[in-house]
Image (cartoon, rainbow, N blue to C red; front, side, top):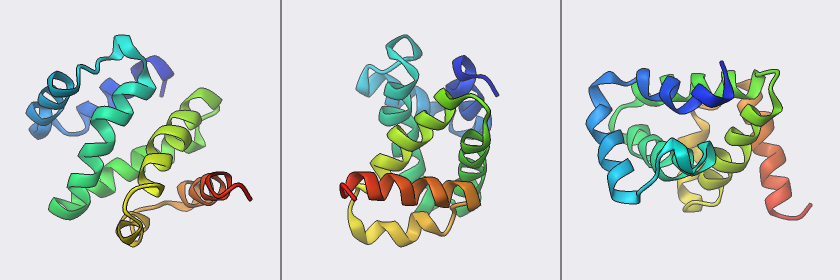
Length: 122
């Protein structure tokens, strides 16, 4: 897993949803030239929010990818997960948290707890 390939690697996991990704990219104007944090916030996070309810199987694949991101030896990769994906999910409608947490792996759960503490200024 390499930082520069994160978005493309994520999208490749969901070939049936390529139209969703392209549509979100167009709608938001986000692309990898804007930076990986931007495309994850504007495209990946909405995809995850959608799949948690519409396709738990896809959500499971996404969260396994996130678990790999958190386990990466490259701290920039973990930062994308922590400060873009998890922060967006954790600051979303609080009633949604239990739905997201169902898919957290061990490392993602630890990262989410750290981000939540940071967000609450603990």
